[in-house]
Amino acid sequence: MSAKKSVLIVDDEKKIAEVMRSYFENAGYDVEIAHSGTEAINAFEHRTPSLIVLDLMMPGMSGEEVCKTIRKRSCVPIIMLTAKSEEESVLQGFGIGADDYVPKPFSPRQLLARADAVLRRASADAVPVADEISYNDGELVLDNLRHEVRKNGVNVRLTPKEYNILMTMARYPTKAFTRDELIDFALGSEFAGFDRVIDTHVKNIRQKIETDPKSPKYIITVHGLGYRFGGDIL
Amino acid sequence: MSAKKSVLIVDDEKKIAEVMRSYFENAGYDVEIAHSGTEAINAFEHRTPSLIVLDLMMPGMSGEEVCKTIRKRSCVPIIMLTAKSEEESVLQGFGIGADDYVPKPFSPRQLLARADAVLRRASADAVPVADEISYNDGELVLDNLRHEVRKNGVNVRLTPKEYNILMTMARYPTKAFTRDELIDFALGSEFAGFDRVIDTHVKNIRQKIETDPKSPKYIITVHGLGYRFGGDIL
DNA sequence: CTCGTTCTTCATAATTTCTACACATTGAGC
DNA sequence: GCTCAATGTGTAGAAATTATGAAGAACGAG
Image (cartoon, rainbow over all chains, first blue to last red; front, side, top):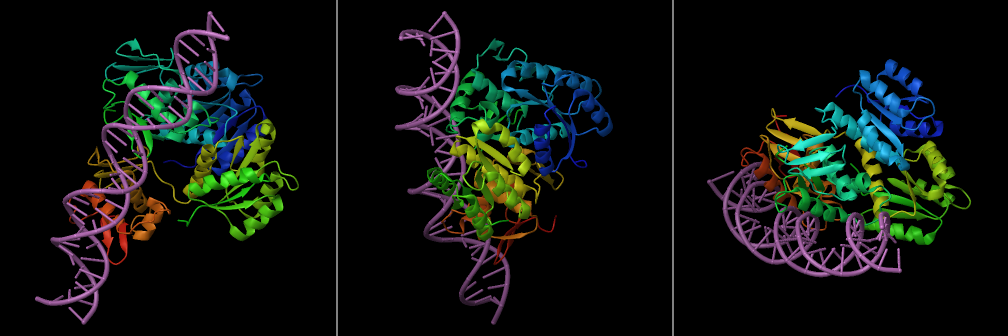
C-alpha cells in the first residue's frame, strides 16, 4: 500500500475531536483536525488526507455542504458522524456521497473498524455504494434509496434488522463477518443478547432472498466464523 | 507471540467483579482482581497482565487516576467501564489513555468482544496481517478478508482449525513451529489432547493446497521439531 | 388494552469438523 | 543395510457448529 494512513477529523466539539485524535493516532494514523466546515475545506486542500471523518451537525457550514463540496473534486473516503435521532438524515448522507456513517454516540472501536474497512475498500477496486445494486441479472436488487430489497422484481419486505444485516454484509461484498461484527454494525453496539440471533435472522433473510434456501448463493456460511455476502458467483 | 491471555479486573463491587471473572476465565483468560485503585496498581506491578478492565467510578482512587498512573509506565491495553450517564466523562476517559470504554450495564459478550478486539489490535501492530497474500504467482492465495484459501483460483475450503494452523505458520514464513506452539496459537491454549493432531491437520491442509502432497512445497516438515511454512521456494 | 409484527431464545436435527488410533512409510544414525 | 524413532495416512466415533422450527417477549399501532 501507500505511505502512512492519514485522517482529517471535522467536528466542532473540540473535546470529541481530541478524543478521536488520540484513537486514530494510536491506530497509526496521521491526524489533522478542523473545527468548522471552512476549516475543513482548507485543510483538505492542503493535506489531502486518505480519509475524512465528518460530523453532520455543525454550526455554520453543515457537514452535508462540506461533503458535497469535497465530493466535487475528490473521491476521498468520507465517514459521517450522525446523532441517533438523525437516522433519517443518515440516508441522505449516503445520497450526498458519504461512504459510511457512524451514529453518535459511537465507540472508538467501531469508528476505527469502519475507517479501516472504508480505506480497505477504497484501496482495493472500489465497490461504490450505489443507490441500487443488482445481482444475477436483476434477480436480486438491493435498493438503498427506497430502502427495500426486491427478488425478481417484487419487494421481499425485510424487517428492519434483516435489512440492516443484509446491507452491512453487502456493503463489503465477500468480507467474512463474525456474528459479533454483524451485531455491532447492524443491531447496534448496545445489543446485549446472545450472538446466535444472527443465525435466525440469516435464516429468515435466506428464506426471502434465496431461490433455494438450502443451498444459498448470496449469504454464505463461513464455518467457525460467521457469514459473508457473495460467494463464488461474485 | 505470547503465552496465555491475562486480565486484571478492577472494580469495587465484588459481585460484579466475580461475574466478570467467570466470563473471562471461560474465555481462556488468567484473571486477577483488584477492588480498589491502590490494589490495582500493586497487582499491575506484580502480574503485568495483558489487559486491564477498569471501573471508572470507585471510592478512593478513581479509575481515572489509576489509568493515568499506569499509563506513565506502560501501554498495556485498558478498557474503562462507565455508567451511562457519564458519557461526558467517558470522553475524557479517552483523553486519559483508555483504549476503549464499555458503558454499564454491559453484557459479558460485549465486554469480551471488546477485550479481544483491543488485544488483537495491540498485537496486530507487531505483525500486520495483509488482507490477501499470494504465493508462486497466484498459485496459492491466503485471503484473510474472505477468510478462505484459494489454489489456482478456487476456494479449497479449509476447516477452521486448518485455516488457523496455516495462517499461524504463514504469519512467520520459514519459522519452524513445534507442535505445541501450533496448538497454543491455532487450537487454543485450553486444548488438552495429543500433539499429533497437528500431523493430521497438516496432512489435510497439504492435500488441499499442495500440488503434490507427497513432496510438499508450502508446509515443510522439520524432522524432530515440527513444521514450517515456506521452504526453499520462498 | 388488544392485535399483529418483529425480535429473541430455546430445543433439536443436520451437518461439518476434530481427535484418536492403527498401521504404513520415511529418515537419521550406526 | 539395519534399527528405532518420527512422520504420513486412512478411518471412525466423538465433538462442535450450524440449520431449523416453534414459542414466548418485546414493541408499536390503533
